[in-house]
Image: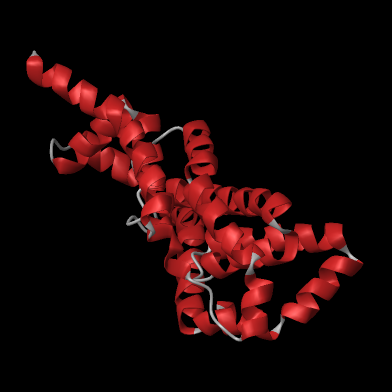
Length: 242
């Protein structure tokens, strides 16, 4: 009987191992978050530019790889990485490199969460009629709209937007599509800030990271969020009318 029980336990451990690794890495990263600080970027700016100038392709690939690791393990450095992308590579290809790394990292954590927790949560929702089931049904009815909405609304933490869809069984294709294009507005804004870091460093100042919430910036992003929510609102009104 013990022999028969062992393989399932082993399989269960292999399934949750990625989630455990992410949790451990995120905890370590939280206590070492100064490694991805503005001061670290300022202190190493000359070395980064020298690396870029001597091995541009290698520097670009290295940047994307580090971004994937930061996002996949929920390390607290995505914003500084985006600034570094603009500083090192300019608006283009800086924004494209950031979008590639962020989307790949988000996809990795999505697949890890689905492998470790998705099936168990799915069975629980299928057996219940509570709030989780209603959220799942609403998400499935307007999947792309919901996914775009959680990407575009700035108050939703990035790691929550990465994990939550996996737990509700959304399509991987829709997840990747909405992640890449949904994070594009914020990525472009902070890459733009990163492009001007050379002057900021020269003055010994810090960049204005609150620029995303300036009316002329946040207004169009919220308009996109409202546009994404429009199909959800219309479906709700039609259902209410019936």
